[in-house]
Image (cartoon, rainbow, N blue to C red):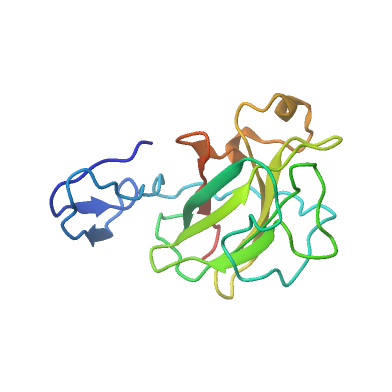
Length: 193
């Protein structure tokens, strides 16, 4: 999906067949709009995956995880949605991953953080690309939870990684979409929100 440029006031539907609309203020010529979620009515819920041995509770509330991490920067953005494509505001999104050497910080909180989605269900993390390590391809771990809802624990993968086909946990439907070398996108669909 590509970003579109809108020179005047427009109304955008969220998802195919969705009834919710947003009235957008007038934009300067050439200004980019955020991408809207890609979601079909009665969308499939994001599949769960194991949290692995490196989850650590009580990560800091932050969206920039780059402190003390070396590696290629990644901007990970997306939406948290219901199965009928409605955005979920104030959903918890907790992200953790290995560093550029394939190591997890189990003493502190490098490469770990959480945030809450905004009123449109959007989240945003600035981080780095983790390295692969023995038996695993490059990936992010994520927990997503709507208020008082069940926790979705899953993993996100990088497209085109040679190690994907050798990783027994890898799933192509959990690949992030990239619109540039560092701009990743993944929309989470919760079974109950």
